[in-house]
Amino acid sequence: VQLQASGGGLVQAGGSLRLSCANSGPGRIYSTHAIGWFRQAPGKDREFVTAITWGSGTTKYADSVKDRFTISRDNAKNTVYLQMNSLKPEDTAVYYCAANKYGTTYLISTVDTNAWGQGTLVTVSS
Image (cartoon, rainbow, N blue to C red; front, top):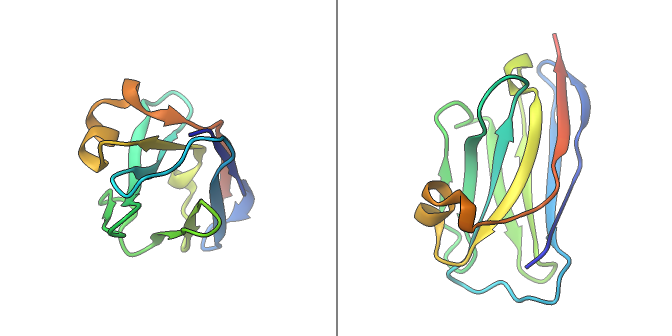
């Protein structure tokens, strides 16, 4: 699995952006895979944002983004989307997508075993 993230940019507070994470490699995404997003703001540690299980579509969100962000998948396109609404300046960060074939718990707790995409910068101006 080789992930390609895109869609970052500059947006005003209250605005929306949609990020994409596509599997561009020859490896297959299986039903047990979790695909998710992490973010790292300047001077801060990387933090979990959201994830989706490829087969079941089960989702998990960090409290800070619940009711504002929505993760979804398109099986045919091997792509995961992150719709971000009501953006706040504190959402400013480099966003990374990641995949783990053992599911969401491993995606979050054993990040060294994740496949990572390159980051995409999201800047929210006040």
